[in-house]
Image (tube, rainbow, N blue to C red; front, top):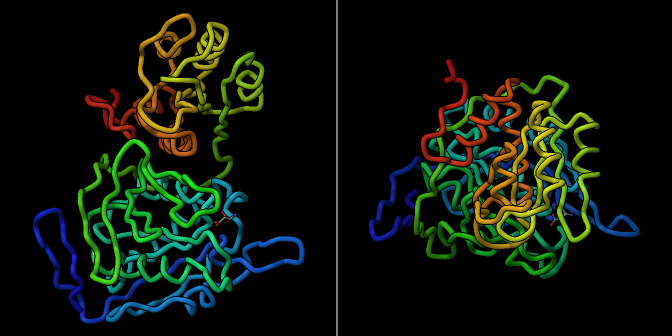
Length: 353
Ligand code: ASP
């Protein structure tokens, strides 16, 4: 088999095995959903999902039925099970790549968690659908075909999201449409490539920090909460998260990362208690930045919060979660968070004297 893979201006089509074995890990979502009498829910097994798609020439598929849930119901435990399953599948050298079928609601979170720990040149490609399994105009079959083709064709790109003919890096990609089929984009960046009848075209290589080691999945898993700022907001919910035992908190601030002096004080107190606090923004595009005081990002950073660049809330939370899973030491957690954010000069996790 020789699929056409174009990397930028270089055509680096790789010789791969005659038949590429791709493992599809099925987790549920709309791509596996059927009518339940009052609404749709994930139900179908992976084999039923794969049966809807044309498998690209030269690809053989093995299915792992991991779970069948709507992705809004996923927990950290589910996501760590997925991470471990990916590792186990890739331990078999005859596997050429992995496709994960996943609900679109939280696909960006699982994709990013996998990407932060992915240390293998073989691709992991997440896909799903906006329309249910048996919809006559369903987008699942095409997305699954494209994901299989991508998984059988590329190397060294980390974890990818393939949807509606587009190839996205896990990092930075978010769900941008509630219903339309072009559901994913990186609002602050550009996509990695395109996939269609003529093969996979790669425009850029995603920047990825050194992968984190596989974390322990032993309970208790760290609680990481998200709190959104808005007009009239006080520190009540941020403090409630601390009282609930949160080991990490993501503040979804306004603008370029701004809140109030009271929230800045609450962050200072949370950080003093060992809580890892990160700041992202409600704005869809662009980075958070230290510009404003009087409760702005200048003050939040001075209080010990870490600004998360262009990561939006769901992935900022995953970055905090990964840091919390990487160490129990608050200072090492900050290092780990800066590492996964790609902060220049950030020490590698676990390298503090
Ligand atoms: N509610 C679904 C889910 O995320 C939506 C989808 O898959 O598109 O599981």
